[in-house]
Length: 112
Length: 115
Image 1 (cartoon, rainbow over the protein chains, first blue to last red):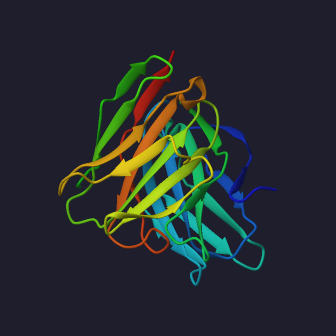
Image 2: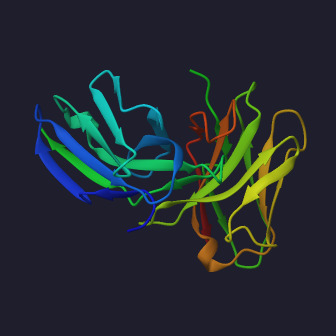
């Protein structure tokens, strides 16, 4: 798999349900970041988790990082229709500080 | 919250023409980046810039591309002779610290269409 690969590619849920997206990567990293992108718009930074952290919360977002498995998950709790967007993980590798490698993204649709 | 601003939001050009995409990073940020996203594909790193020089560049960033910080506020990406495959959304980003340790703030992008 490629660096920063998300799954599933697409996720469709009902409002109020939780959404979980996963990201896997291959190399050692400094940190991992999650971004959101509404259709045709810019990237909005959601959360950054450093390589020495295991879990981080921000509002309805919960991110976990397992460096032994080289994977991360993003959980959105109590989803809303406005959460409909594409979500990307991006990794910053130890050998390439300053260069973020993005995954293909998960397209989340939250139905009202 | 402070923002990275990009102009124009849309740019249409003829193949072979030169384009300059402009960005105003957040004022106290020191690290600047260009990324691009071809329609339906992932966001790709182009170049990082610090202390008035390129820190790192990708394979995509060949001789037709150049970056400049012409004054204290603007950061530009120049594509010298555009090709059809340069059509993409181009994102500028900035960070206070090196991008490996700090979050990136992205602009809303410039949609470049090469005809």
